[in-house]
Image (tube, rainbow, N blue to C red; front, side, top):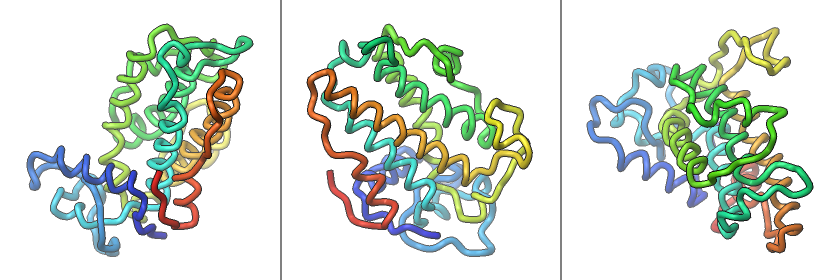
Length: 230
């Protein structure tokens, strides 16, 4: 399934990737815009900037990009002090952002791109059962940005055929143990994980004195292919 990228956030991600490409002949898996994927297209890792710059993002990629947008919008007006505040012993916003980002780093960047995990976010404290605490939001924010920057070109370069790739899985998520981790499913799971914790953040916003806001706008629009402008 192809999704026409009418969302401004998706367009901005595409432009950011295109602007960062320094060599059209050597930069792999770059941004996508207009033409559908063809059956004879080479695998993502073999494509050049020139070949990739006309493609549409796949639906899974669009869902994850827009989930990032909604999550970022939900914390845009939160002060640095409130980002690390824990309410009734629960997780702070900074921990939640680090937690969902560790999943995309572990599931996609490490397994499908063969990249090293971010040293901060791969700490057990950001995994399931972590303490929910963060002392330094700016440091976590930089780590999150780095993980996304490493993932964004890969997401935008994927074709429908690429999404079918399934690899052996030895992690803690039981549903992948029998059949392995499928790339398309992993991306959608990560997007859903972001939106799940978006609900947590919106509920806590009100407890902290912020307006709840209207979410998940971009993600919801992407599901039905509707235009959206925040």
